Amino acid sequence: MTARVLAVIDRRADGTREQIADLIEFCVGVRTGFGSLDLVLRGHSVVCATEGRRPPEQADPLEGSRRRLSTLLRIGVRTWVDSTDLAEHAPGSPLLQGAVEIDTDTLAGTWSTYENVWFL
Amino acid sequence: MSDAAKRSWDLLLVVTSDRYGAERFPTVRRLVDLALDSGRSVQVWACNYANMLTECSTKTAPAADVCCAGDGAACCGVNPPVTTTAAGDHPAAARFIEDRLATHPERFSWVACSTCSADREPVEHLPGVLTEPSFANFRSYVDAAKKTVYVGGA
Image (cartoon, rainbow over all chains, first blue to last red; front, top):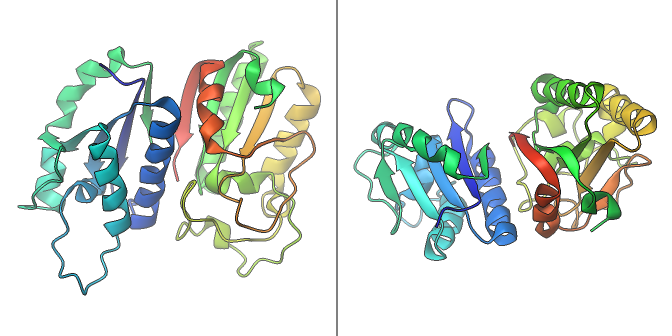
């Protein structure tokens, strides 16, 4: 079933980790409030959908967002990760369980099936 | 949820940006005025840094431009730092909101979601600004609007 909200996180040069963390938090709130959410990650935010590769002793600034995204995936938030941006920002990194790599441009054809398409 | 949210609105704008001062707020202003000028009603949901547009705190800011620095806080997660008065920091935006609340009380509403500021010092908002204690009510506002536009973007 299509979720009521499709959230698209698409940040380029200004996609700092704090901004991305804010947006993932917003998604948590939307999922809580609406009961469903589909999510598209583009730009630097694709890194949130990959398993961390740093040694545990190194602080990973995106770890919090990664954990929250893992939770969203576990509770059924469909998450698509842009293949081109993944190759640029996290080449070779395995995705979190449930996340799907795709050319997200092709998803534009599905927008009309949602009540709300929000570019966060 | 307040009565203002229960009624139907033509447009809901969601504003969370920490860049309202320079980039986003003119977008909000234009959309609000276009809606009002065409006889429609518009409600604004503000959270995260956008809350500061209407806050009237008496705290002294730790740095002059901290709330526009974009280097902290998270919507409904990590709290924005306490800063000086929003109205004082962004007088043009505050004047705009106050004016539209006064001139279009039936067709304009500004809602400050206070989840972000729940753990901060209690703050006052401009007279007429509605406050929502929880982001959980966000859906009610979306449901009450014929169209929701997410202006963004923290």
